[in-house]
Image 1 (spheres, one colour):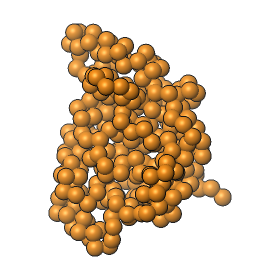
Image 2 (cartoon, rainbow, N blue to C red; image 1 turned 90 degrees about the vertical axis):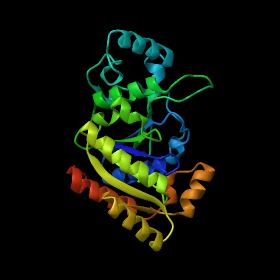
Image 3 (spheres, rainbow, N blue to C red; image 1 turned 135 degrees about the vertical axis):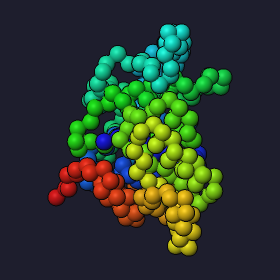
Image 4 (cartoon, one colour; image 1 turned 60 degrees about the vertical axis):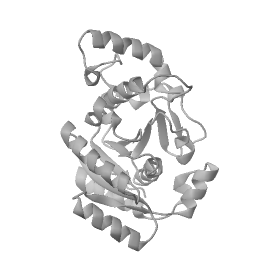
Length: 271
C-alpha cells in the first residue's frame, strides 16, 4: 500500500508522515517512508533515524543525466508523465542498495533527491524519478510506503499520484491550506487516483476543531482526523528529535483506523 501525503508548505506534512509511520509500525506493518520533497532536510530525525540516506537521484546518474534523458525523450515526442528513466520493471525495497535506504526503529527511509546548490535548475527530474520509482515499487500485503510529497500541487502535473493507492491532504487552520486541499481533491479525481481525506493539523482547541470541521463540511471535504497543537511536537522540531517519541496522543491511530476502513488493508497485531 502506498500513501501520498500532500498539502501546502508549512501545514506539517512531514509531522503527519512521521506520526503515521509510528502508528503503522505498532500495527506490525513494515514501514517505508519515501521523501519526495526536494527541500526537506529533517525527515530522518523526525522518524528517529540518525542520518539521511543517499538520494536515489545519485544512484541513477544524477540530475544532469536525467535531464539529458528527458530532453531526448521530449524530442521523441514523449510527454513527461510517459517517460521512463529506470531500466527495471519492478523494484522490491530490498533491491534498493543499502546506502540509499536508512533503517532503524523498524522503519526505513528512502530519499528521491535534494536541491544541493543555487542555480540548479527545475525540480522536474526529481518528479519524474519519484513517479517512476513509486510506480515500480513492489510491496507485500503487510508493507506500507508513506510518501512525503513536495509542497503544493506541481507533482500532480507529473502523474505522481497515479503511482500510489491513495492521497491524503494535510491542512492547518488557514483559508489558503483549505483552498489547496480542495484543489488536491479535484486533481486527484482528474488523475483517477483515490482521495482518502483531510488531516487537520495544528488544531489548538476544540473550538478551532469545530470551526475547521464546519468549513470542511461546507466544502464536502472528507475528514480523516486531526492532530492537536502540541508543545511536544514543537520541541521535537526545534531540537531535531523523533516526532513519535514526543507525542503520545491517540489521534494518529484513529486516522489509520479510518484509512483501514477505506482501503481495507490487513495488519499484524503484536502480542
